[in-house]
Image (cartoon, rainbow, N blue to C red; front, side, top):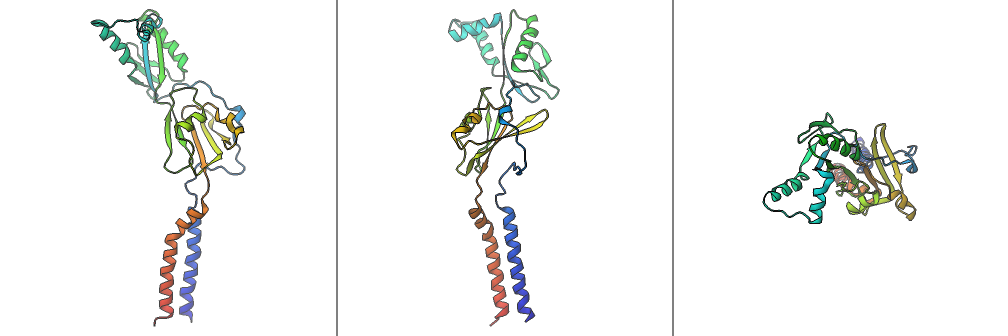
Amino acid sequence: MHLTQAPGRALLFTFFIAVFVSGCTINRDIMFRTGDDFVFSPLEEMESPGYRIAPNDMLQFQLYSNKGQRLNQITAGGVVASGNGVQQMNRWNLQGDIAYLVKPSGLVELPELGDIRLEGLTIEEAELLLEEAYGSFYKDPFVILRVQNNRVYIFPGESGRASVVTLKNMNTTVLEVLALAGGIGSRANASKVKLIRRTDEGNEVYKMDLSTIEGLNAANAVVQAYDIIYVEPMPQLVRETTESLTPITSLISTLAFFYAFIVNPN
């Protein structure tokens, strides 16, 4: 009597443990969860200040004399390249293909200048500073500076589709970034889009509802370098519960077989 009850109790206990464990694994791929009492930053107060150069940035740097006169001649086709002129034009053209690293110290090593501190400056401020610094070497220098590795991280609400989008335009919007990433996933919940922005005071989290036309204003918000755009996926309870319980069902079937064998050995 007791021998037959023990396997039955063990089987029942195993079943409840299995259901509990499977419940803990459902929707485990959802990231950046926020509780019901979480306070989001107001969208209407979102600021888009000019980007400031930071350590580990890769800078594209171009320098022209005479306030960019040669640049105008090249783009307008007014320079005839021959002899030494070919070499000179090649030097100007190749210069923009070289990337200069902003060191952890905030310094950048540039030709002829050596180390110069650009950390914390906007692009415009850095260009003015470099034009002033190169004034000792060239007449009326004209500087073009771009950050090559500014990027945004996109999680479009579907497994395997996360991407990193490089910002080529400093006025890129949330809508444009999502389009560059191929749009949101088929499992995505467009009413639950989070934009996470790193600031000096900590992370600011903004919630956007892009499921209706009213969300277009939020979608037109300008992103900043290193923003995270996370589209929350829709829960798939039935599919994930089924997938989680498949190995457990197999285990229970095996235990049931042994239980029947013990109770009815013949």
